[in-house]
Every structure is written in structure tokens, then in C-alpha cells.
Length: 262
Picture 1 (cartoon, rainbow, N blue to C red):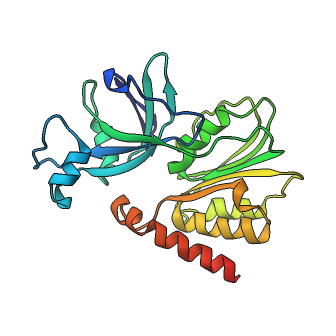
Picture 2: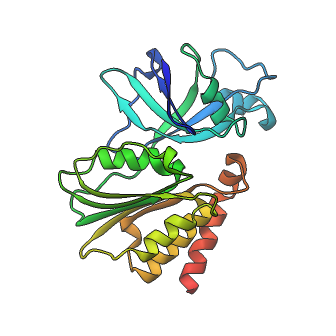
Picture 3: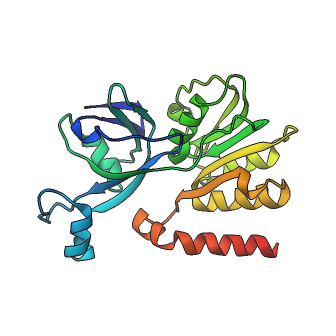
């Protein structure tokens, strides 16, 4: 339908049309979709059916899959917002979003999801990098009135900050990498945080190494129960999504084993 440059490296693509007639995100604020990007030199059967493609075509000809958070779903207007981090020509989804024009077709599977702010929590902790920003922003918009939240979002610099509106009592801290290693600032901020009293619900997502450090800190040093945390690596430095998704289960298993031995 349209695109909008949110920050120098964040582009919003708004999808619409009859293809969204039965779309619904349910109660989750971290709803995600699996975007499908056909290979340019491959002819796919019509009508497009990803199940049929995977059953009848070799894997190397399957569309590239990239996972993205639903920033907002407006059922009345039938508009689906997806925010893309764009770094020039790097990657698959970012360059597509940078060039997207009204009328372009984007296919996807989903949505999935599993987290929403718990109104019974005494306070909320949310942390992540740019990849987690859409989900964090959606969660902040869904907080109960006056719900306390400590929020840390790491971006490259002040030009990447966004306006976020919430009915909650939100203490939002923007952390600027400014050339430092990715994840260093947000890990330090959470480690240094003076935890308020009471039951905390945690949402931490982003780069896998950053998430690994915070998972261990929150579970072992802060004593946060596993069931009170939504915490996972959206991506891993040095791997594209194909490589990360194929190794994510094993990565998580190893992380759990390391923490059990600690």
C-alpha cells in the first residue's frame, strides 16, 4: 500500500488487499510472519502454493524465508505494518523493503506468536536491539494503564530512535552503540539495573550472543523464573536466517545445558 522511512535504517512497509481478508494476530504483541522471497531465476507454479513448491521442487529453488515481527495490525483498515532494518544492499528483506512500491506483492506464512504483557505482573523488563524494536513498541502500546516498565533498546545512534507511545509508566532508555560491539550496551544496562520489588515479566530478544548473556544473567543471577521470560535470539551475528534457523534449536539446547551446569 505504501512505505515510510521511519529512521535512516528503518523502513515501514504497509501491506493491504484481499490477501489479508482472513488475517488475525490474536492476543500476542510479538506476532510474526514468515516472509517468502521468490528467487529471480526460478519459475513457480500458479497459483503460488508454498506447500506444493516444497513438495515438488528442489530445496535450492525454494523461496528465501525471512521472519519479521508484525508492528501493527489494523483489522478495520485491513493494514499490516512490518518494519525492516535496511543496511544498503545487504541481505534479502531489507533491500526489498527499500525498493518496495505500491502494488508489489509480498507473500508470507503465519502469523505466529506467544507473548503479551501480563496485566498481573508487578513490573515489566524489555530489552533488545533494532530487530526487537517493533515487538517492544507493540508491547509498550499494549501495557495496562500505569503498568511499570523498564525498557532498554540498543541502536547505532540517536538518529535511529523512534517515538513510542504507551499507557504504561515506562522508563525507556535508548542505548547508542556508536561503534561499540553489538549488544554490549544493552547487556551492561540490564546487569546494572536496580531491580524493583515484585514479580517481573521479561521480554528480551535480538542478537543471539546478547540474548545468551542476558538469559544467563536473568536466570542465574536475578532468579527470574523461566516461565516469566520471553527470551530468544531473533538472529545471530555472522549467520543469515537460513543458517541461524537451522542451528537455533541446537544453540538453545547448548545454552540451557551451560546454564544448568552453572
